Length: 129
Image (tube, rainbow, N blue to C red; front, side, top):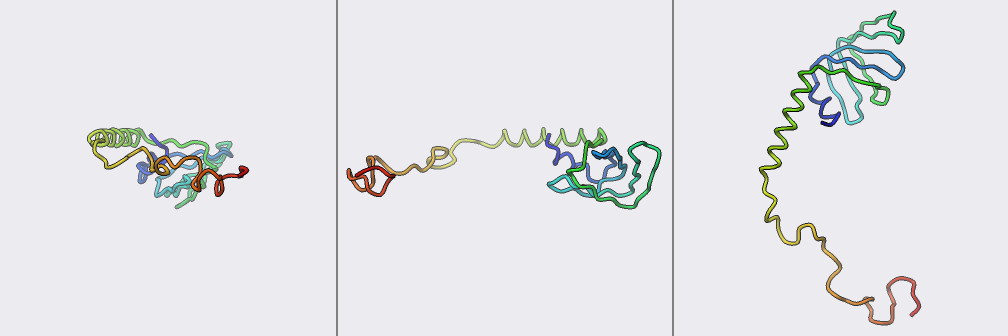
């Protein structure tokens, strides 16, 4: 299970985000991107010592400041089901008959010897000729 697929599935669900500086943010996830930047609505922010609280309508959190995320169990179950469904779909795809030379590379042709210009060695490498 990949973290970004987990976050994308968690859109619309409540979550808790703790930052590296100790502050926590509780709210509903609106969106996330590839850098794990989050947009959260209906946010309650708690100070690092837990004595002060703020309420905000919206909050944008940069992904590199996140320490951990707490996501509801229902989201975890949903992601597990999606991963299982994708694995079953991948197994049903046939791996035979994909065309000519699949997986062997194109190569450089057939037996041309050491050099393309004959035995003189010009045109290839730094050798004496």
